[in-house]
Length: 553
Image (cartoon, rainbow, N blue to C red):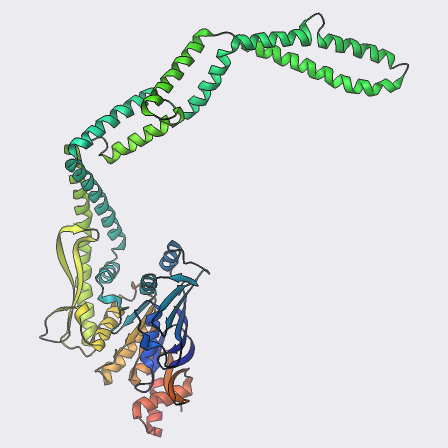
């Protein structure tokens, strides 16, 4: 939801800081007081285009900031993460700066952003129903997504998109094959031969390390044996072996220790040396038992090394890269159709197309049922909103080749009154008519609509009396699921609101500025009375206003 809106030097607003509540909020005030300026400011911070005339006269720049709570909007949080614009969890802050010279800057969570990013983010946060670019219901993609959500088909649409992409990828492979058949056939033949040869070699990086170690040991076995035997001769097996000499020294020192205990220090040093020499001799004997001349094994290792080196030279890589080369060849073969010919690719393409058609037709069935129900319910809602005889249609137009989003396009069409022809919702000229149509659609689809903040401008144009009361009730009901704001001139609509803001203008130093105040119960009675009675407020109009608000006088 929208938590706060800050406006500085924008049109006739010098400084405003507004804190918003959930539910339905009405914005009221005299004509020209600047009610629509608040909506315009919000639209700008959400990415709508600007011009230099929006900076308040005499100011160097205008600045607008809006803070949103997004803790219940995982899609928005994910979008911020993917665009590297996330900051404090559960909060999203947008800021727009308009220079008097025409320059404009956009910030999301304090980071410089593009206007396109702000617009894309704004479409996930706020729907402004009137004549603004942020009216999402006039966009084809939003209409399709709303219909699919209404029909409980969002998961199915993802399956359709996946099936479409799989079909298109195989189709692309087949096109590539046919376009470059000769060259691709030669490449595939070369890669198949290469892959077969490398698979037959069955070489791995682990084996390379083992081969090098084995070859080093086997190639120098004779030298190793000679070195070990000489070492054993010196340490323990020769006539003047070191171990025997050390044992003799220890024996004499132990005997001499009886006459001079001071020799114990020397014994403490020599005894560990004796043990270590014994351990070394034992380890050398054990190593010597395992170390044999094995010409046959050496020959096998050298032949294997030669085969690996030959393959490496052939493919101009180091031996360690041969397994990587095999993986690359296998992956490229897969891209070329998994080693399949054009006939097999055509078969795979037909199978993928059939799978796409099957899931697409299932989606089409759901869409047809949802479109009929949505058309009937929105048409009924229109009749209650001073659009007697009007009709709404969620039209489905077949796509001969299908598409990523199904076998048909979705377009909302409307006839505003009896006898009028059906027109695309995007071409509805009247802001008031479009706003009421949006109210009808949002009311019917409120349980599945994802945008959390709904703003209605001109929704009360051309209506009054009983219809105005119905509009008020619909907005209040909509406020149970969304944060709803409405600019209104009608007391019946304002009286239905959970909260009411009064927009007024006043003269300051020869200029005009706009101010906004949150009204308490007593102030709401006065404002509703003004809306009922005009300039002169009587006790009767005040009593009527109190009655509309359910306030005792």
